[in-house]
Image (cartoon, rainbow, N blue to C red; front, side, top):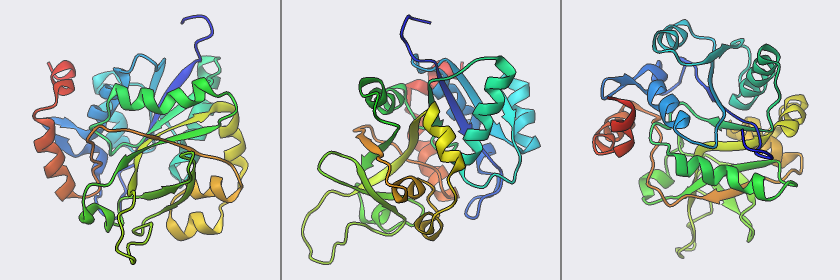
Length: 260
């Protein structure tokens, strides 16, 4: 590791249960489970020192063991993704007798994630030691995405700090004027020291109302800086999304690098 380079771990919290798409992490994309694509693509990022999947599902661990991917088993009782990642990092640090500086959380339904996207999410915390949490966002390109409750929308202030996360279409389009429409991309970076603080926070009303754990941070008055990516990327929330993403990934140059 280079001198002064932060020790960075990426954790992919994966579980087979899903309201809209049960078994989603093991859904096939071009002959590989989606969790395999996410793992391989995160591993290709040079900024990352370790990559782990955090899960409690045997079907996922059996696949990861077969392909030689790193994973950590965590209790199913941990509901939010960030809570699961916090527990996973603690266990990994204890097992490896090491400490991480930054934790990259990549959602298991982001099979189109790229090294550039991950690097962009990491950069603000490298440049500004006062920041604790950054998330990636992308412009919403259609009314269908804007109105889709599976897509988390975010509104930001003039400095690209998150003001609110919602599954509803925000900001309001009632006045008919053009306005920026942004969606959350499932890549965020958390300073390790802050992850411990987050893990001690109790669930908050807006977090529960929206079913978005990032609101817990905002409700406690803590800043989340949003970083814009101009790369075209789609998460997989439904079987319909899976079909679209599979077609797009047929032309993805990264796939050819790890599916030889």
